[in-house]
Length: 324
Image (cartoon, rainbow, N blue to C red; front, side):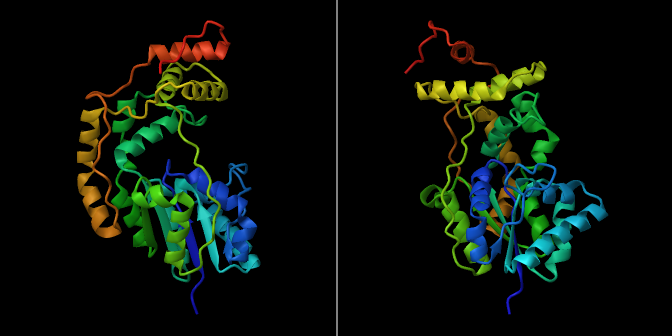
């Protein structure tokens, strides 16, 4: 008889995790009919989010007693459901912290443990993470882009081989997926995730509904928010996001990259050895195509964008036109 299975979707950040978690949360009954439990997400510290924040909180920050209570709560719900597979999703589980895999190690002896991890090439990941962290209320990232990109905590996230090896070391079967690769691009995120899950567990496809991932706002807004954070100026995020989307709909050409050609090449050279091991051990080889961009990083505000955004926010009748 096959052993019970625990599947951990650990992210990483900026790889469609919100869309995946919304699909899983909205398909809870559908999943349970197929023997897969997506446990209750309505526990602290963020019960409003459709992901397992309580699991991450216990694994990364909980005491031994708190960790035991979290494991017991998950196992009790699982046993009551009569499902053969427990599916947990939280991108925080990909943090470079040895305590996180250790939280799941006691389960590895009696369960088949599968870890599914989506990855973006590190330079693209850093830019997307910067874009997210400047917006997060708990972070409001104030450091300039290059300081953020070169910081020790950021660089620790870029050793993907080390990340996956920590999970393999506790006996997990690791499934790595290139988020920007052909498989996701051609088949869609949900279909790719579903196929990886079915292949890893030997179960049927779950037929998850395809959902559009929330795209990151334009990098010009990220630079503006970063400057506001640095100056400790309070702001409401929602109107700024809405106004930026309006400018994009009017035809403002998007700015997607900030690192610059020179910094991008340095970063990729720094992670080159780790990526060679990643390809050898986990089958992920990233594209070598580089975006068209200036040599130096873009860290300064775009005055034209800032003025257009201000005009949009104030509904000025003399709002400057957006260049085609």
